[in-house]
Image (cartoon, rainbow, N blue to C red):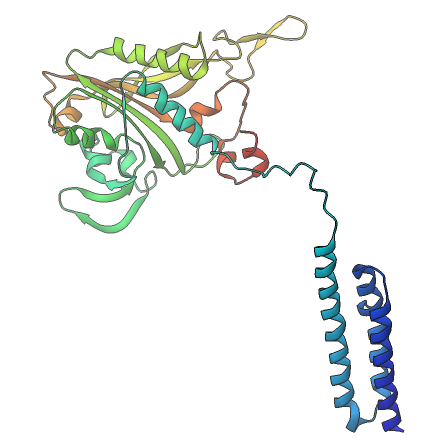
Length: 353
C-alpha cells in the first residue's frame, strides 16, 4: 500500500505540472493558485502523511523538485512576458529626478560672491586648530570662559608647548592671524573666511556644528566708517534694497571697540509694527522691535595685530563674523523657526530650496 501511495503521489505531481503549463492566466494569479498559502502545491504536500516512513524521504524530494519547477517556470514566464510587452515609443520619457545644492551651500556661495565684488579674497583655514590661533593670538587670556571645556570642544591629543591644545574651532576668527602670517605680515588684507565651527550649544537657534563667515580688513587709515559701509552694503545685497544695518556697543576680546550688528526687519521695514487685516498697528511677530541681531564686529584689537606681526601704530583694521544659518533664516519668505531643520536630513524640508 505504501508503494501505491508513493506512485499515486508521483502521478499527482505530473498532473499538477501539466495543469500548470497549460494554464494561461497571468503569473501573479498562477503564483497564488499553485504556490499560495492555500494553493495546490500545499494541498498536495499534505499527502506525504499517507506515505510510509521508509518512503517519506523520496516523497519529500519529489515535492521539493516540484516546488522548484513551479518557481522557475514562473520566473521564466515573467521574463518572457516582460520582453514581449508592447511599448509605445512615442510616449515622452519621464524626467529623471535630480538633486540640488544644500541651502546652506547655496547661501555660502552667494555670500562669497557678494564680498568678492568689493575685493575680498575667499580663504579657508583649519577647522581643527591650535589653541594659539583660536584663543591666545586673539587676545583671550587663559582664564577666559570660552577656553573652558564646557564651551569648547577639545581634541584629545598631546598639546604643543608653543601652540597649546588642539580644539574644534569655535569661530572662524582663528583665520585672522593665519592670514596675516600667510601674507608675511604685509597689509593690505581683505579676507572673507567661511568654514564650519563647533560649540557646545544646541537649541532652535544654535547647533553644535554650524557655519560662520569672517571678514577681515587691515590697511592704513581703516576706521569704523569703513566697517559700517561694508555692513550696509552686505545687508542690501543679501536682504534687498532698503535694508539697513546698525551697530551697538559690546565687548569682544579681539576687537576694540566692539559692536553687535543688527539688520532691519524685512517684514516691518525696521518699524517694529505691522498693520493687521483691520489696518491697526500690531507688534511685528518676526522681530518684535524692527531689528534682527546677526553677529559681532569691531576694530581689530592692537594685540591681535601684534600677534600677526603687524604694527598697530601704522595699520588698523576691522573684522566681523556671524553664522551663515542665522543670516539665511532671516531672509524674506523663509520664516524658519528652528535651524536644526537644515541638518535633519528631512527631504520634505530640503526640497523646498
